[in-house]
Length: 223
Image (tube, rainbow, N blue to C red; front, side):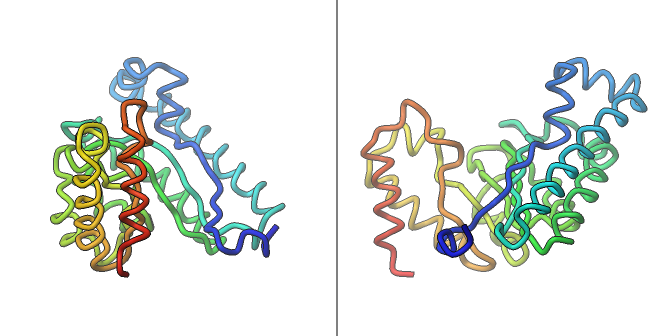
């Protein structure tokens, strides 16, 4: 397996403790739990987080040396900002991720994290506990201006995404897509690296011409 895939960056996919906990309880009920019954909420968060760690350890038992990183999805943001206060995130979510990421790093792996929305206020916390790559960088979400993110965090964080899937990809012309790709490479790739990708999975209303334009712009860029 290893020689066959050495041209690729191979990742293990994990599910995050926050999303799974609120999916199990229902989002509204889980937010009520955090306020009204925080001890019960923390028990559930720990159970889900410990399961993710156990899954990672099981994978590494069989695949140590065959993978390069861990990709974890857990949405902390909305179009307008964080889904909870920064203080609540730091109290309940951050400690679990500190534990998870420390295990990832013990295996010598890179940590990729997916979170939709405007999460700028907690990016310093993400960097502090060892996040290597942040996905998907929604440029139209609150606080997610690409130039500002690059200036403030580009020396320590790699960005993954940022080609706008809310306006440019579904509604723009192929030339608009190509121009945005070039601008993002020059902006987000200025310091610690940038992985070109849409700011969400390609949606059904995205014209095939615009999808092709994204790939063509990357392949034609003079790195």
